[in-house]
Length: 294
Image (cartoon, rainbow, N blue to C red; front, side, top):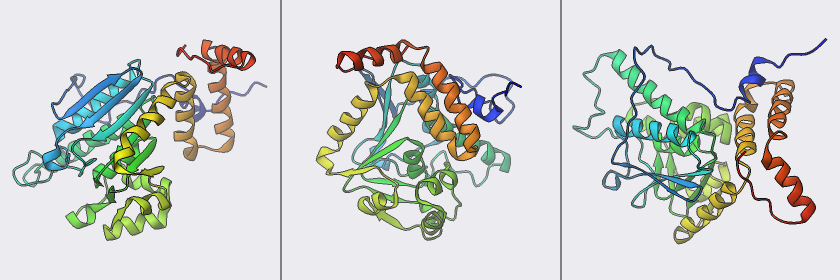
């Protein structure tokens, strides 16, 4: 009797995951760019910068849309690694809820506010599901949705002056930007609840102890440290790394058996690529492999 791969295993190895919009739309959502979202590519590394330093890079709905579409474009590009950061010495202060900002929703119908949160959710998924490894480079504040944005990345490097907070409770709000799902996976449920209920602001070293960040470096060394990591990732085999990212992202949602099935399917794809053959040749020839991405 031939076993069929489970649905969960099959979905975790699709080359490009197609996620239907959670709302019915008569027409596709148009592509969006935003002047406060800078996307720059150098070699195989694309850097996405939230560039609104006068507001500590707090994001408006239009900026969330710019991020969402930027990451969707990156998913289809030849980039091999992504750096997500903020301009002017801060990462992101979350959503801009200042007086007069276009995020004010007190007079809006409830369905409009729900639609707005779904748009934010689509931005989270665009970052989290991007097939390229994403490195968050955090300097200064990463609070509220800004912390969620860092957690949606695959790795987080921060400066010694970085500060983190689930500040929602201080604003009379519950968690959003995926923090209710992303943070417990990093630090455990009890610590996540403590940060959520207290709105405590923690420093870089404490964030590293909890597992929010991978590494803390001096502020003047942050760019170089992240650049080195991004270059290392970009030099890797992109198809295999995308497969590993899917496997790890999906691991806590499936059984060991399903994970093994997914691993087998992913390796089946890898063995058909030129990159795997190149890795074998490089090993025999005692040299570094030159991966092409096919």
